[in-house]
Image 1 (cartoon, helix red, strand yellow):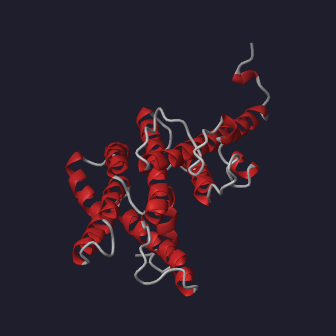
Image 2 (cartoon, rainbow, N blue to C red):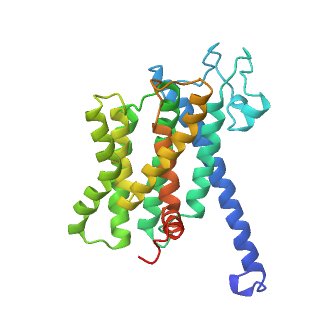
Length: 288
């Protein structure tokens, strides 16, 4: 029998590196699989199908798909983005959500901001991964049908509540400060978009964006919420402006903003401290 202490000095770091690589690959595959599940679930919810018992099928010819047709990323690439049976295009959203979900899972493991020092940190991490799956479903649904359904949104808010409580306990925040922290965190997204929703008579933003802001307020501190709001609007501008210039969209076109909020939430949750500090240094505010 070998023990860790009996191994040569250079072996243990090498084994740690190999384990990290194994974890990264595992999370990448797991994230891609859940991304594929998210895409299928979004379509089944839209078609009022049973997302538990119904088998996956082509949206056009409705041929039941085999296991080889459902391998995340790989099947899309081998089939050149088309159905094996009717040759209709599957669409970019299928592979996009699989790749993005895989990257989100890997990034969450690699830069998890709360560490893995105890059971609570691990529990919050698991809740965050579950939240990523729900956000992936919303990402696809809003991107394709411009709606954030309550059947996905409300459970996501509940998950966000668990993350909020776990996050407060991890950082050692007094219980009496939790309502203040939560109220401040709700202002950037929920408050701002709620105001726009009422002032514009539902024309500028949808109620789904306001509800998504509730989740964002639960998982992001108020300063991170401001950063997420800025990043989401920046991403939206980068996406919309070329479409306006090419005439593919007009000022009255309805643009799904949920995907930008979701991407911004993930990025700021994982890299918020780095982004805020970098901006402060660039703006000359680091000494204030």
